[in-house]
Image 1 (cartoon, helix red, strand yellow):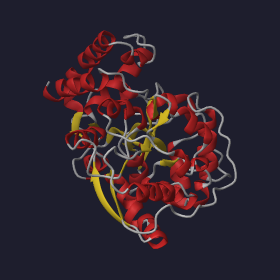
Image 2 (image 1 turned 120 degrees about the vertical axis):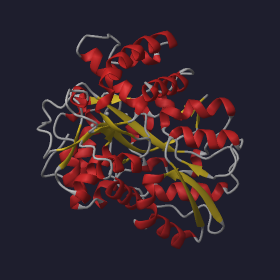
Image 3 (image 1 turned 135 degrees about the horizontal axis):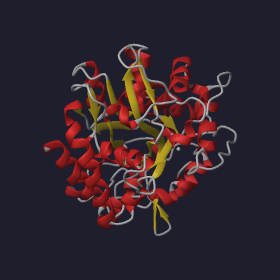
Image 4 (image 1 turned 180 degrees about the horizontal axis):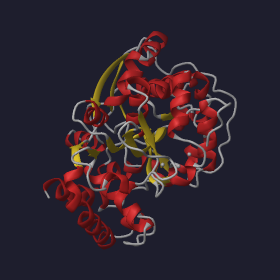
Length: 392
């Protein structure tokens, strides 16, 4: 999740207006044309079951938020929910099972190319899907980010978010104007920092390019060739390893990221936005979240159906339910991530609106760095260098 998209705020407007403005300003997304809220169609299926494999941090919205219950009440379809914590976990699970075992999965859109060579996903029948529910510009730009293959749609854009900096404002005197990747690597932090191994190196690539030390076209050259990626990541390792004593916890899931702050003593870290937003909303307002001035990674997660899905019509019905404004608003309200569903902003609570304003003040769109569709060597090399940092 999230390896992978870009976002303005009007205090008097709803948080969703803020989200719309942020997306409208984003270079990758372009203008957002919002239409009238989607009117739900009749479900394609009205019995049976659907096996859903999803991110662990979606469970609160699906179960406690009532999304699954409202779906089951409306359709009579039972939802069997299983969870994972990383893109690699779901990819490997499907690869080992030849695409079988689940009916609906949630791959990050830019990871789509990892599934295609082994035919792990089925081409979606868009006539059975409520495509008009999705913000048009996001739907359009998901094509180049990896959501399609050979003219067919395989991954629908579902939600987006960022990987920036979470910090304890009672311990660190930081501000949006100066917030920097370098704040994680300064002297004297003594195991107070939480990072994810592989994405911390990408953030360093963006930073080192910004200060002119390692030119990389704002880190986009990591997608250019294996040679370029090694050159850039070697330099990032050379920067990180002497400062590794700052790291108090590595994380690879939303739960691990939150635990780094609540249980492992970390006071600052590079996290997904939902970590900082939920800590701010649910634990203590001292926790803050913001985007680094050099740029923070932005991702787009999606929905897909594995090639070996058995309950296909039920899968389509579940996907269509998730693309209702009510479900989109509930999902964003509880998870802290941003829905791609038009009209979902009308179903956000006041706390979610306030937290979004905290995380994404005016001009945040200038700090977004969008993950691109993965090249053949990208995942392997990123894992290789993550191991090097872990074992250094």
